Length: 442
Image (cartoon, rainbow, N blue to C red; front, side, top):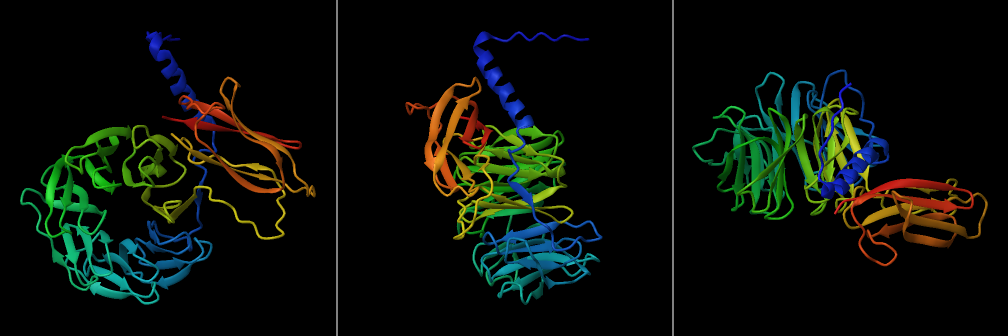
């Protein structure tokens, strides 16, 4: 037996205790991350296919199958699907919609010839097929006329996808573009591989609506996704020989700091606000940050196959992930439940707080069962630290049966901010008691 003795400075012991508590919580508290729920795909294909998807709101979305060319539509967040296009001789690599009517998809024939873009102006009822100069692997439209496509270079259209021209790129690069992101009509970024160098990534930027592109990084990690929250703050994801990497910039992309966080490659990134972000990638990895990327927590790995793309809709409250084997995941951050008149709440319930972990504010949903008790009954909702000491009383009163929501702002009974750490929220009624773990990171 080997005994390892760590010589730790006394002032670092509290941080070590918090770190170990955080790891234990993530291993034991399965409620974290369980808000990503699997959506049944239209039908199980006998081929290994990726689901390329796009939703314009919480209910209305499309799925394109990579190696079958089929396109499906749902108007009830995936409960049922309608087949809009069936073409077994083509591959589809990406799909995007601006709204419920205007959408595009790109791909090529199985033989490798006849690259195309599909265009619809009526929500996919009719798709028009248009030949493209080369196979496009990704698209980014900023309105119904102006759009960009990536592949072996960057192409643009000003007539909604009918004609395409190649953008002039710096002579020093041979670009394989994997993703294009525009934050407004003028400012955009593109990432991919610089084929002039082995295992080298590439980051390009435009400030004039794509008329010209400049190289801001040509020896970066190979990049698969990029997201800018504002003109200064941005993130990239990708991989190098030692695994997944997340890059951060606060100067519009001129300089980047990289974190190597996993042995799995990262494919897509999305931030719902300036602090909360999500990353997905190989082997079903899902990671989350709630402090602007300073700390990333692994939510899932191995439960799902490769996850390719993530997006959020409805003011970034509803999320969707698309991946291999027609994997579709849906995320709901716990919006208020509107009960129909006459609905009977049959169970007590304390939902996992959202976000969790959090750094300033978290929302807690709970419900009081009816149990034929029509009058209000006593209940409490209290926050404790890991030593069992009371920190904050959120609710301590009589409540009628129904669904409720409260917020905790990371403060104690004296309205002082509490320290980072693991906390316990306890819901207690005359017939029911339960606990949940919360993680506060400042």
